Amino acid sequence: MSDFAGTDIGASPAPREGHGITFGEAVRVWVRIAALSFGGPAGQIAVMHRILVDEKRWIGESRFLHALNYCMLLPGPEAQQLAIYIGWLLHKTKGGLVAGTLFVLPGFLSILALSYLYVIFGNVGVVEGLFFGLKAAVLAIVLQAVVRIGNRALKNRVMVLIAVAAFLGIFAFHVPFPLIILSAAVVGYIGGRAGSPLFQVGGGHGSAAPGLADRDSALGETTPAHARPNLTWSLKISAILLFLWLGPVATIVLTLGADSVFSQIGIFFSKMAMVTFGGAYAVLSYVAQQAVQHYGWLQPGEMLDGLGMAETTPGPLIMVVQFVGFLGAFRDPGTLSPLTAATLASILTTWVTFVPCFLWIFLGAPFIEGLRNNRALTGAMSAITAAVVGVIMNLAVWFALHVIFGEVVRWQAYGIALDIPVLSSINVPSFLLTLAAVIAIFRFRAGMIQTLLAVSLAGIVWHMGIELF
Image 1 (cartoon, one colour):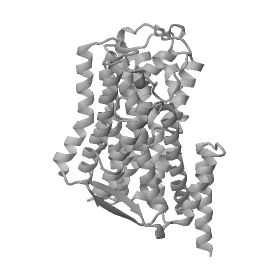
Image 2 (cartoon, rainbow, N blue to C red; image 1 turned 180 degrees about the vertical axis):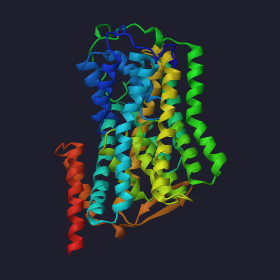
Image 3 (cartoon, helix red, strand yellow; image 1 turned 90 degrees about the vertical axis):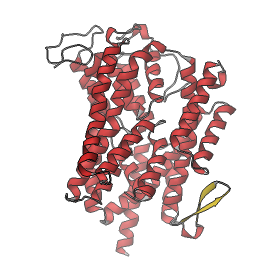
Image 4 (tube, helix red, strand yellow; image 1 turned 135 degrees about the vertical axis):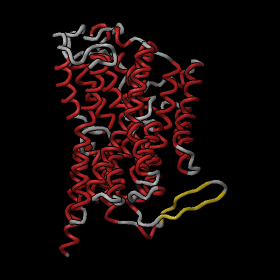
């Protein structure tokens, strides 16, 4: 069996690579990173940076940030794509495949187990209380993401203006999410290419402060031979990955018809894989609108339950889509049993969400390696990050409306459509739990896991108290 990069996977590997890192050693490190990848993209990227740059010294600071900047410009989870990119830099195609797969696997198995628990025991008081508390904690964590990313991205009036425009565009005018991100990228690219310092505010989830020099890392500062542009290899691997991605979807549509829930899931999440710029928080607004309002696969509160699962398990936050697909098929199983249909839909959703990530990296990374410190790309990434602040703020507002209030009405006029809460429908326990989570995170600097556990426990106590009295 030949590696796409031209090396033989089946043959016995050389004892050491040119950079001195064995493939087996790299696999053990990627397993460790996957097991520690809690806390969303910021936490996951911080873990990778600490282990790969500071501890192992495998890759330099500049090269790490360059790879991250490219991943920030791509649709899909940037943390997993960064793992694929660095795995590919270190050990060619097999390195990227292993790093990217291991990064997703623990989260997939955890979400699947929690999904079973959710549908089988969801009406049990303890489980209801658990997810009741999770909703409140997740809302506070989304607000924290707005502040965290905003502090990094909104360094001048132009970036603030982009964020405000993105929020108003999606919240009041319902501009499609992909159009918002594309518009921001174009503006940033033009500004960066023109050399404006307003678009050179840094990017990614880490600091651009000096760290390990590329020349002092195991990989070095030169480009490995396999990482240089090779059109034949790029076309070959692109064709293979494109077939692996869309082949199963086409087969399902032709076999079951376009109206099947499996066809809808395959098509929708394949589309999502092409437009999910800006990370999980940003795209969840788009997913929630479609999955809840258009397809009816789940309720708004259940979206928060799924996000709570993703927040408390390792792996990318976008794994919440696995829960969405699970519930969609569970409630429309066709001729299959609900759990069988849900399990298959869970696998399908995960497949069409993450296979494209390998395609984007393997196709573009060899060319991106030659564009380090490109001002136009940095400008585009900075503008996208600013727009993401506005999009995540919209997500926070959307969650708040459906978590804290029981009834929401829509006001429309002059092309504007606003969701207005009915104040008399406020859910006081949910509001108090959310307020407690916000105070814990912003006033006392409580960690994400501690906040999730504490507020979930409070939700369990509340529900158990209702059942007793």
